Image (tube, rainbow, N blue to C red; front, side, top):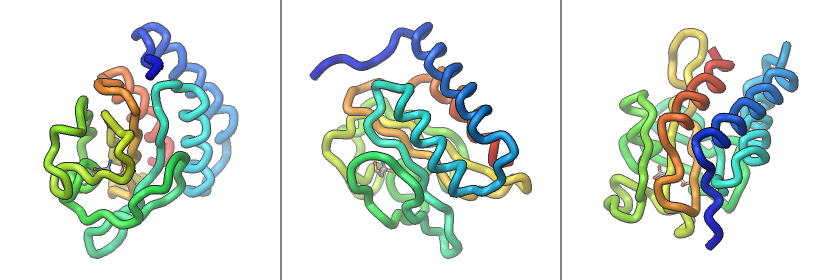
Length: 161
Ligand code: SME
């Protein structure tokens, strides 16, 4: 498979472009679903190393349900504590997984699509600092995500606060 990973400088430039597009598109917007859908589209367009991007919505009863996403069909329900998304829902801290294939299936990782090789999951908070969702981004390449992704994504997601 072609290597679609970006050198740090290019990755930073891509995120800066994405940030500018999002600022222009979402200025004065308040609708949560609209913001989620637009963030998915802008990230997918600007980051060649991602093939799945989407939000899991935090529900009552400690469950995540699939929200807006782009990519192959996703698992619809994830319990808090299960998989990478469920663990981030509990810890409320960003998690980067360089190789999802070494994780225990069903516990530490939930495989919705076997093409996923690495991922980043970022918690999403509202203005009351409550968890409203997690953003899950997957790559078909190992070690696709690093602190650059974490820093930019956490900044982008502060739009929900
Ligand atoms: N990556 C997830 C499952 C969701 S899919 O990748 C869309 C996890 O283990 O949390």
